Image (cartoon, rainbow, N blue to C red; front, side):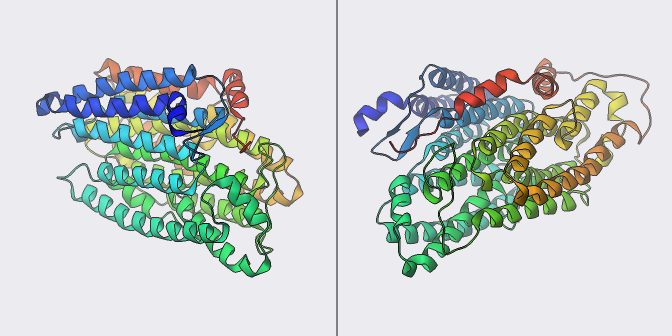
Length: 496
């Protein structure tokens, strides 16, 4: 589709871009203490963006001369990104970490990052992939170091820049090799060119694939590309930590699915996609090993943490491993499982981080000791945190159980060669129970039992806690609407 005609189907991104411009201009007219009002401009723009996605119909095509896909698959991830961005903006309004800073530009950067995530979920051209990743990365660097007076935040931003530049450079080198081998930047043309390559090109193709996977692995915090995650998550504002643990991970998996299916796969989208043989290397098995390593490392290191925030950072690595279990399958049930898991993960993980934000604001810390007696002193906060911990473990009847059920079902359905992976996943779920229940133990069994009961002082805090907790519980036994939505979203542009 030509550039001019493409604009008619590019409304979500256009609305988001205009919203950012309006927010930046509006911020110029607010004093520092009133700069939080920029959030309401952005929330209005995000609502319009969501509306434009929902009324956009079920078009399956490519835009801007084959660089961006518009399909129900990308729309699904855009909704998740919008929901995450909206919730984090609302969470930021009550963040004590941000009180002494001008936050207008903070909210604007969040929206720019959401724009980059939109492009990540839709890109079907390696140039657009790289541009989208760089938009997201640069905005992430700014947000990670937003607490300029806090040394840990400056350190987090610097480490993020160094690791990000390294991974981007490696991925760019891999993309350039792939372009040199195939003579094109478009996914589907690459897939056809790879299928016709001779044995002389196998080593170069292997290197290109490995280098590209390094960049993708960095975005989803997969082992061994996860080293940036704990330090960056711990030093960043907790609201940004929550956002980085959900939205970029969702866009990263969307990008991975497209790349595997449309470049390394045979193009039979969402049906019976098979992997192209690259130098005889068993890519599905290698990615399965990476998935096992990711969940195992994440869980084993999370056990050793004394900070709930840092524990959740390692926990997010483990959850990336659970979702990676379905990547080698490249089947409809595997992709369905990833999408279901991401939907459930959004509510329970953002909910857990929001409780950390609240405790940090009231007690000034985020260690396990800061949660002592919380369940008795603040029953609402303790109750929802218990729910989030149970859900993150994957126990019924919570949303976390449904997410893991579909992942494990897809892995077992794929055949006996993946039974070992399902077993590793079960063992890791048992390991994670220890450190999640440790939070519950501190809330109810450690410290003095309070005689007085308190509620959060802000109605917005109560509303957000309930908004995140209710789906976490309800989707554990009534998830039909979510399942139908995901089924309708399993339509991906296949180059035709």
